[in-house]
Image (tube, rainbow, N blue to C red):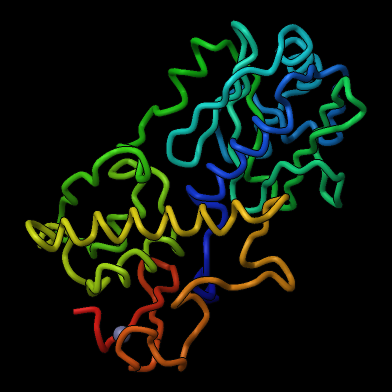
Length: 277
Ligand SMILES: [Zn+2]
């Protein structure tokens, strides 16, 4: 049976950065006074996407981290967050459907009650995200383990290999934080054909791509900052601020040619054949 190509891959770096800023803002000057784990599969012993790795003592492990110390700063590398609580920490990842909100919602897996009467909820329909209670030291180790430089903070590294540039951009070991949607949009901003071999992106082209990635991430983050709670583009009724995503047949905002899509490594790539050369 053929699996249809995956359209997007939310959340990506801007959504994670927005999540870290939201949690920081919502927890500043407050303390966690209660913990509720509604689904033990979301609290894991190690960084993994597998719900089967949920730990039976997850609630106790979570309490040991968040009740002991004031919520501290949140570090981000690519699509991983580390929320520090004194010598302890929570490694957070959102998978494909995870989000932290202030309002409980269907699929709430973990809730943290705050001393001001508010609460922070982790919701995750597909259970690919999770919370890893750990020490600060081990968390710092896990935060960037196996990942390339951060796509927002660090310079874009050289992209090695004959594989297509879009596929290389999505390889977290090469550059951390880009997924299907933002990689395609960044290539459009840079006017680069997503099928070009990665190793041919050098010199002026590489500089253009670095600029495109930076612009794409910063613009998206600025749009998210206008919201109070996170909105993913796949959410029902959510606005689509992206020039290419799901705009097949519409004219390219830059050259007017019809936007189209094709499949690369099982993922839908939106592109403009008119100006991405
Ligand atoms: Zn175009």
